[in-house]
Image (cartoon, rainbow, N blue to C red; front, top):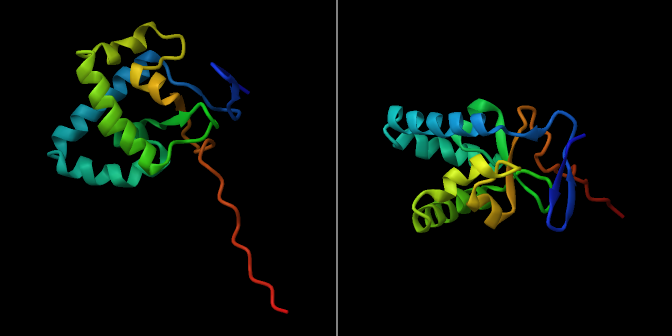
Length: 143
């Protein structure tokens, strides 16, 4: 099992899940750009609504990687992914004039500045081992 050191402790990742490399993150960013162009932006936008619920963008989905929270080691929810991709990433990227993206190259956990703000990392997880488990439905008992 891989572990990731955080400011509040250690997060243990499931077997087969590890941090995504710097080169994979760069390749994913390039793939995102290509997908946005090929789908004229509209297809990419629609596709995002299906992948965000698993802590992924369309490019991450194709590459088998996802964003997880270091608070619980689970994939981001739809709303957290939306916040990360459209609000925090855009704001911090703009304020830092792109340094937020380059930060990945110098960080030991391959985090960008927006990952540090949200306490997230990008991991290889093609099998979905970091997805939150859903409790089975219970049947009501009759008296």
